[in-house]
Amino acid sequence: MAENLMTRTLRTSPAAHLATLMAEAEVTGARAVSLRELPFAVQIGLRATPGSASARALEAALGVALPARHGEVAGDGAGEHVLWLGPDEFLAVDVSREQSTGDADALEAALEGLPGQALDLSANRTILVLSGPSAREVLEKGCQADLHPRAFPVGRGIVTAVGPVPVLLHRSGEQEYRVYPRASFAEFLVRWLVDSMQEFRQEDVL
Image (cartoon, rainbow, N blue to C red):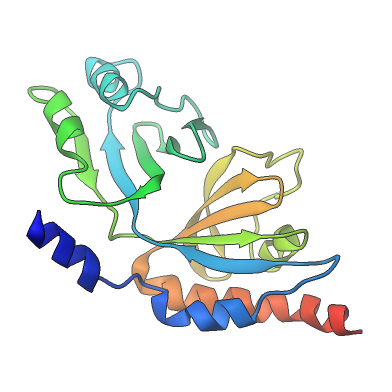
């Protein structure tokens, strides 16, 4: 327990050193947009064939059904949910608490003797939260996916790219998007998004 507390105290998120930059880049007014990091969320990579005994075991342990198709996100977007990454690949995320040692243990145990995988990937990606009326327009400057609400409604999640950075993109609210870059790309993507937000600051000043 003491070791776990020490780890939490000492660890630093991939974009922690950019917190001031993100705060200062916030745009207010009619075309508002803001950017922040949601650090240390639980992220567990899952592999299982849908409908198989492995999938059923993971679903029972999670209390959430695995998504059935591309773009689907199952569960509670404000808590524990699962994003579809591929036909037999998923990412379980819990944004309601911080990652800690042993988060994947129950899922690993559920797969005992069955084909599949449950692996803690919490350090692999961070989550950037882009929100506000102009959030979609900021993303559209560098995302080739169709982000119109008809094609990308609240609750959808896809594998795509923002600028040159591969990301997971989850539309978590009417005006909120969660962007998952790998930790090594977090600084580049933060600076890319901050630069893309400047246009709306200038319009606000005018």
